[in-house]
Image (cartoon, rainbow, N blue to C red; front, side, top):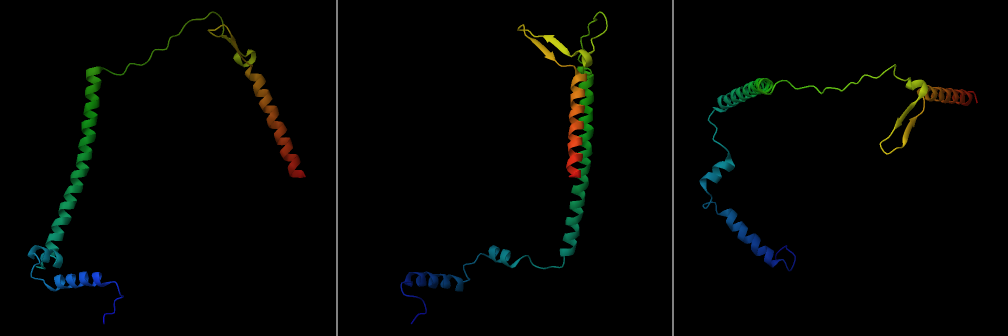
Length: 149
């Protein structure tokens, strides 16, 4: 009697078929057998390994020189661009003369008329600076009181 559970007869037939295939090694391709067993050992592994290392070193040197060549080529192309197109032109800032001294924005603030007729008004910076300093002083006093308590 089989030690397999009942109802597993189909699986048993498949296992038997594969067992027959595994036992029959005459159909194995010789190239496949060589791949499975690995290359034959002939003692030249060290020489082959040394040759591979030397080839890797040459590739690394070649890679470094190609980077240098790329940098040289890029510099040459930038030089050609400057010769053919001329140097980049700087944007000219338009300046106009105004009579008198400019207004002191820190003391007077900023007032400008907008295109739609409204006016934009900015407070004097000195006032803002004074307000910020007062706020800092109040915050420092509160911190000191909290530390004492």
